[in-house]
Image 1: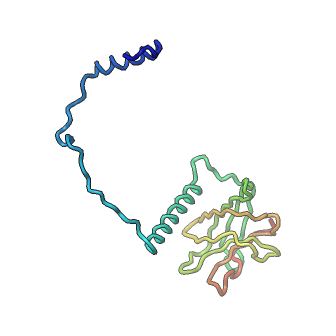
Image 2: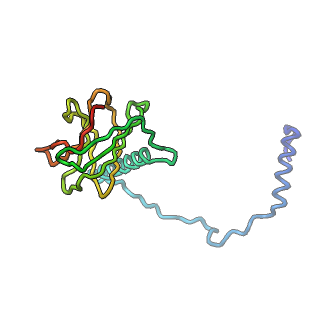
Image 3: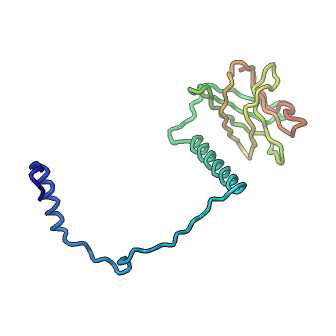
Amino acid sequence: MGGDDLDAQERARLLAAHEALLIAGPPAELPPALVRAPRPEAVVVALPSGRRRSTLLVAAAIALVAFALGTATSRKSGDAFAATWTHELRGTAAAPHAWAAISGTKKDRAGNWKMLLKTTGLPQVHGKKYYVLWLTKHGRPVAQCGTFLVGDGTTVATFVEPYEVQEFDGWAVTLWRGPKTPTGPALLRTAAV
């Protein structure tokens, strides 16, 4: 059980291991299929080259980015929207029955703030049309905050923005009809921020 170079503690540990092996007994018989080691044929799979490899790499990168964005933007159960300000938007003559409320959070460490828009009364649009939320200066849309579509009832849209809200005098919602008429008339408008 070892030479004279073992101390008492090491000798006791080895003796306990030896006794455990004696209690466990011999290993089970080897199945006949494993008497000889299998010899798998080596199969070499070449990596795709050229355009195919580039396409696969781009697809993998897009999938990774989509996963990261989905993970980063998903709401956790304790991640409530803590609004620090709210403004009302009322329908203009172009959409007299429309109404909205816009709420925002404090800025995060990076300088962005979250915004929540709840709106009702805007008609559903189809094709390449959608609604655009703007910050305004002197009543004119100047800083685009994002785009959205509406459904039946109340629509809720969320945005993340870096703008200094105090530099603007209000909010407006317009309808995007295409590149020739990107802003259109204001359908919803706030009082001064």
